[in-house]
Image (cartoon, rainbow, N blue to C red; front, side, top):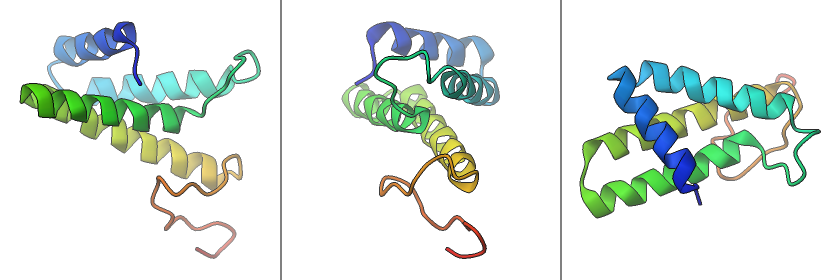
Length: 110
């Protein structure tokens, strides 16, 4: 689950930018930073899995409160998670994961 502090940061970033494009770029940067520092993190979890957890958390918040901004944030988190997964999978850094679409070409085959 997402921590309260991180949830507040993501919500503030979404509200301060009045849109999804800046949050999308922020989450991409967050993921790249986490990948680059993975040797320094003790219990490393791949960023695309974190983002899928964020997606689940914000979707639950949307269902509980009915606020559309939580749904938009959830969609953005899922979009970034799939982008990061496709990039890592294409570069042979990540293995196949059933949580993601696997129609990504790897060495000329699916």
